Length: 291
Image (cartoon, rainbow, N blue to C red):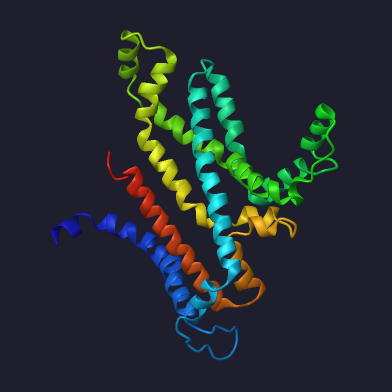
């Protein structure tokens, strides 16, 4: 009781945070679970139908196609979104001019601040077969005819992965640079005294010391695999929909376009379940809780 009185101000400060999560996270989660067991209608009766909505989702080929699309695109974003900023951060760390390093960080971080409406528009413009910069350079340098990147299934997933990595590369790069700054300089001094080259210092000092930061970035990328939506919603079109429609797009289609709220709620809980399972698996494989 004395401890509560002593820290009463701190407990009081936690009340708005707890209230926020109850109102905007846990209550909608519980309400969504209730809806998933109902034949939910916007008006009229909403009878409980047991696990019928879940069975409908599991027997829907579009759900499983969306599931595999999500895994393909999400895995690509997770891997490339880890390696690209890591290599970039290690390269920037070797730059001696401080002004160049800060300018590069700022330029790389700007896409992360933009919404997917803006980023998607930029990529659609760049990849346009008529006026896009990519095709203009392709025709100019190679004489190759323009490629319809955004209407060919063979390019669809690669474009989704590439644009997502480009957008968030600056953010992840800053995380790695922050980890590099925290490395004890005496480790580099000891390595130099032992005759280590710059490459050996990076390999045997920087990279091992960044292990905890790597775990954080991998986990963050993993948690975002099944949350992909804005990007696909902005950049998809009927020609490539079969290759890029993800689980969140499936949920949107069922809940908003078809007004099948119960089915959409059931699908969303599969998304939550998949996210939980893959996050737990990655935590176990990376030994996230071990320092």
